[in-house]
Length: 595
Image (cartoon, rainbow, N blue to C red; front, side, top):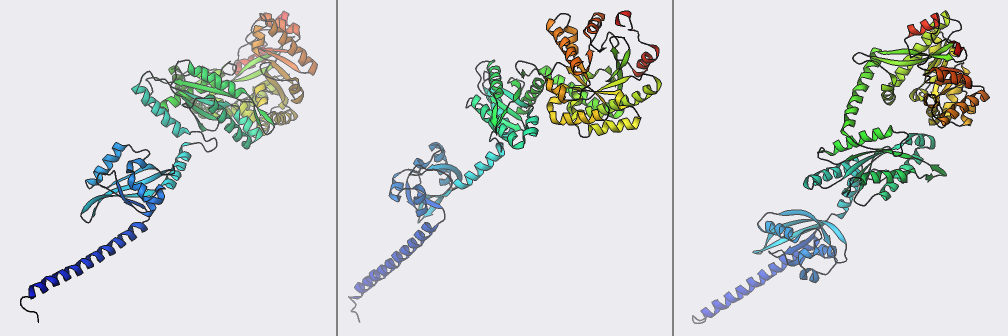
């Protein structure tokens, strides 16, 4: 037993001992807690970094963070976190950690640069934590470079053409919109849009194959890129259509100079699989002005201008600058197409007949069947005003079928009433001639109406033949074997060679009216007329001169040995009843000088 005097000492000793044991247990607990903390800290999947409250000192980082950064922990602690940021402004970083410090966790993406210079994309979650009463910031960093790469690939595919890797319609429209907004801020900013369409690409594609066609598009894309500045955009809209955005133009004429440069570079042949492929381009141009608030409006007007350029076949340059009047014409064209479709349904077409006269005797040999449109509001419309639209919309097929059927019906009637029976010439359009089973269609109509094939003369222009010479030869031979007469229309205006006259079974050459009307004043045109007549005589073919408008022209052609004439001097195109009156009552143009 302790003496009373010793008891206070014992109590004090016991307290010290108890305190030491408690301290040991606390230290042990802390060590266990720290071990657990390090275990969790180091085994985390993401990179973890502990920052001080000012966000400019790194206090601790786990193994993943050290590996991601590429430098030891000691160096990480020496460098402020902002040193690792690539595209995040220090002021923005400060706003981020201040918000996190205020209890508003931050989640954002940015690029980081590692110690070895590698730039990676990271997702960072920044939040305030309480570490044993001490307020700190915890940054959870996740490498999302692979995800960003996949997203970039998806974005590239979404905004680029798969074949040429050029920007596509969506991307170029986005850039046009940016240019429009920039012009609003700076009215002196100039830019322009060029709509390019390759000429005769379909012929190349069909004749040489789609593989060659695709490679040609890739080669064209590269040439276009080489012609432009880095700040310009060349895009592929699809098919054989391209769009070019010219940015920051200095002078208004710069866009025309660029268009001429593009034309010139695309005229050079492309060497593909042993073929020298020649192509050309039609270009529509629209320059930025205050009218345009939407990129689609600029694209529409550039397309309209390109359409106009497409129709300029013999121009030195095939580019057209858009003018507002073109839009009005397009609206009128759309109305015309609408009316044409209605006209086909309502059978508003008529066939007129223009006499073809034997020049030596003045005898009426036959007629050319010419379609007219009896519009319910505009009256009688000549073919030049609607045939181009009919060709583009394929309405030429039902219209052409109607003319063929009417010519067959009329030929059968006149053959029964008059001897010798007149011939009837019928024009075959490009669309008709290249349509499937043309020969079968004509044969069926002949059988249906009971007319004689020899009394039908089918007219084809040189340009139709040039589209596909092999197919043209097959079709023409089939028609000729069935007994139809064949005429080459507008002879002399195209690119026919002598081999074509031997290759294709034409019976007649029709001299284009442009030569007949100019031969009085232009000796070169006169010499061409003489040469065609002499050539036809040598090859055993007959000749028809179109556009004979004066007695002098008729007499001169007769003296040259031209077989037949057609034109206003003899008669304008007339209705079937008037044409029959000429057959029945005789021809008013018969004069001694022509007999």
